[in-house]
Image 1: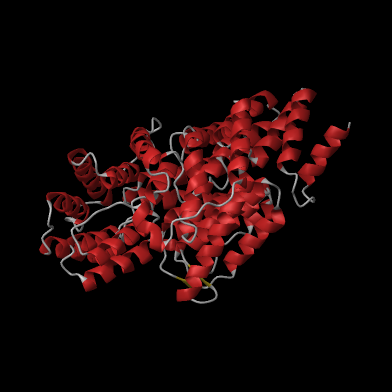
Image 2: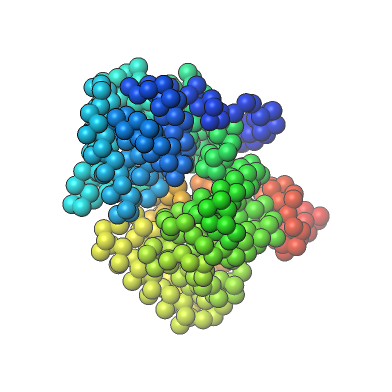
Length: 539
């Protein structure tokens, strides 16, 4: 494992140092995306460009590009297919009513245009399966129907690389976050890797490989795609951001910072064109959550605070959605909890920046979770209990809506907060039972793509608790488990050093402190934890 991590760091550094190769732009998109359709030559070129944007989830621009084709060539059935594809977001969140209406109408127009080949008819039939009966069938049922339809397209046309790529995306879209065998993700990666050898500059291949490998167990395999993707589509905010999903999984914080800085600049520039100063969309703040998280792991609190403060200055939104709500709630909470600033955590409130968090109960829960931990650690037992009760109510609300994944995410927070309150009240046996249950429940689920990590990993919270009650041996084991799941976390490395010191293992303690200082070589310099590490190493 030690040699593997060294290889990862060296490879990432080497690839980042390579000159930027000529990237695919609008005028060369047809060479990157080979998707022949039975439309005129001008429409074919525009279609390839629109599909190129679709593969990078640049949905507003893809929608406009496909719509332009339908205006100039209404009989191009696949252009209508493209509009329909631009209104559902396989890995993000279910389309709202307006998007479902627009997508359904596009499907009807595609069918009315009478696709000219069986292949095109099959593509249209596949996306029709997603929109069909959307007033009766739930999102997942329709997503699985699309996946099964795309599997048929993939099998019928083995030479059609786009069929393979879109089928792989469908597999990722229906992958369950509770499937720790990662069956769909592994199958998608197997399909995509075959295409990757032939078309390494295809945006969909690199993009969906990153999503396929966006788990701790598979992340190393996604590094080549991560290093390629931003160079393929440098003007697309999401493309610039996506490599950081792999960098985050591997604890490559500086690479994540560089990726998200570029993505954020591109996202801000794009939004300014439509909303002006102070405007933001989901991509804008999504990059900021990943960026703040990376800064905090390197001890760069001033940069992290700058990210948080920028968020609080926004005021105009381009439609609230899942990644937007997650980032808006998480960024202030993460800033307090990662630094263990319990007073700031106790004083947290929902950011007043026009995002209706009440529509996203799990986002409201993050704020309550932060407040509960802050209050438990500052002696406000009644306040902490009130927030824990609120967490239970938010969880129940999601269970009523049959949203089990997010309900369980809140349950992890409720258990953790309840456990820390029990510790504050002197019942350490109950505290350990509750926080361990939180960590074990969290381990049954993978993180959502909307977030770089939990605002405070439950496994690390358990290790902190064990260290606080002087069970250094158990704490050290839990810190190791935390670091295996999330490499190079500042707080887990610090905890591991403290646990070893508490246990009298000075060699192990010094080693962990040394790693912490190496990780934080560019830190602000005023974190007391770093002064602590330097003091130990100076003796």
